[in-house]
Length: 556
Image 1: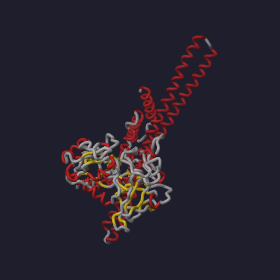
Image 2: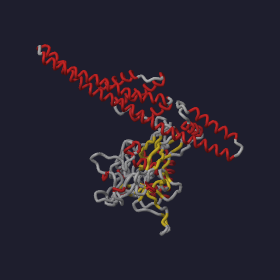
Image 3: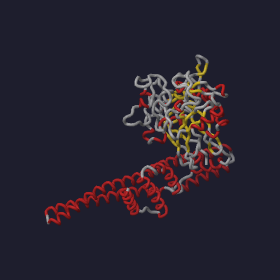
Image 4: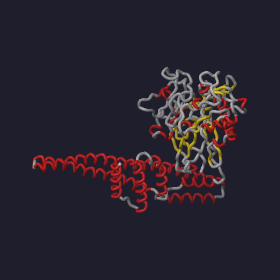
């Protein structure tokens, strides 16, 4: 299992201070007045969070990263399909809707392949850039001012990539324990891809799918986007770059993904062509909008092409309001042993579900194509048959990916249906029970006093309350049947290994949410296993389990 332990901020600082003791003096608002021999945290992490990851810099301080999860069920070849861009764009060739994929290099801490990558929490600052270039203590800046916590801008893409390369080499040589690992392979710092950038800017898996598709990440009911995005309006920065961490973060804890400085990404620019990127690699991509841009035009989908060179000045092209933030990733193939696993996983995700009626015929066709390819004497025929086979595999892999997404939606629907049914049953039964207790008291009083007219009214009310309880039981049974239909469909149409894999995948969405919902998730797993073992869905058992969950809620 990969080791994901990172040194604390104080440890990171100690590493840097031990190498360059006394080399950096931090000034607050008065840069000529030394304050201490170490960076103050607010100069590089003004809004700290407990799970921040801090990499040390050569002269003290650090660069802060946040984990961005990309869970999947396809092992080492798994990724997350995402829709990027936006519908109805006035420039669809720039930010039109397109399908893409994102995946992290680092495995989960539990040893699973639920990948993640790291995204810079803030834009790279002037101070971090200056410090990161230092090769010896003599090259460290003598003072760090608060103003140097502004984003560094006016750099070319190659300069940023050179910084990332030099910084990674310094970390490997001086603080290797600070870098995340994949097996024995160290991660490294680089510019993010466009997919990583937009996935993070939209909020990744920290937001619901509908919120992910919105033009900007969600904010609170009483909040304004002026609290999150620095733009050129008079109610914002007025066109002036802001210090990092001045505004509020997005749902992933990332600051200024939208607004403040535009950000250069690692991917070359490509036009959007009806749902996909065009094949020509163009110039440099900058994302996120900036303080020179109006708020209404700053969205998660916005992207522009920047020329790498200024043909008028015959020099590198730079932009006054354009900077960058870095990500951390790792190489894709980290060992020789991984080769066999990659082949196995590719075969698995393209394999038909054995529970499907067409599975055997699909496998027979695939085997026939392979046999024909081996026996073909002409190399052109061999290549054509290989292409057909690979096309079939790709189609099946895509179909299986859509199947898995549908299974996750059905599983989640079943959990939520169970939770809703138990909640409704609990609420209405408690109300009816309270009324019934009052009626029983009144009935006894009527019998004790001999008030027959009042007794008739009480008995009518009692019968009405009993009828409501009977209807409540009927509603619960209807919901149990609806739930049972979902279980039956999962058990009848798919193999247990396929369903189990997707049930494992959605576990984190429900376990820990609340006690009743967690109980519903575990019940669903039990009901599915019962269905696979018996070949039939136990509706009476499901109904009893729904009542039991409601009873547990009453006890709580």
